[in-house]
Length: 79
Image 1 (tube, rainbow, N blue to C red):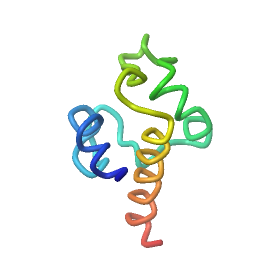
Image 2 (spheres, rainbow, N blue to C red; image 1 turned 120 degrees about the vertical axis):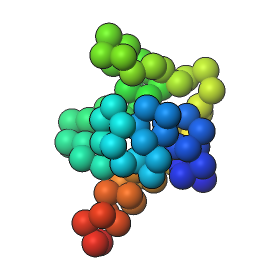
Image 3 (cartoon, rainbow, N blue to C red; image 1 turned 30 degrees about the horizontal axis):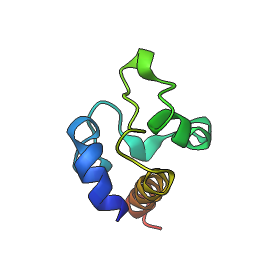
Image 4 (cartoon, rainbow, N blue to C red; image 1 turned 90 degrees about the vertical axis):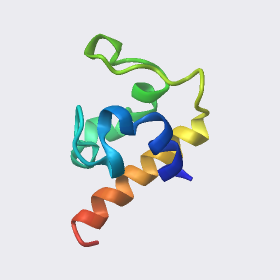
């Protein structure tokens, strides 16, 4: 489910399969992981060009996308 949501809402800017794009999300630091929901749903990075998706994503959707990005990072590290 996270993969499908990512493809619909994130891939345009962040690249298919979370590779490349504006920011390669597979390489997020701990601080970014910790505030992922605030970024995606709360709009705390509006000034950096990151839109809020609170109008189309639920908290569960945001969590599913975050889990997908973590899975992609682990795949690339061979975990």
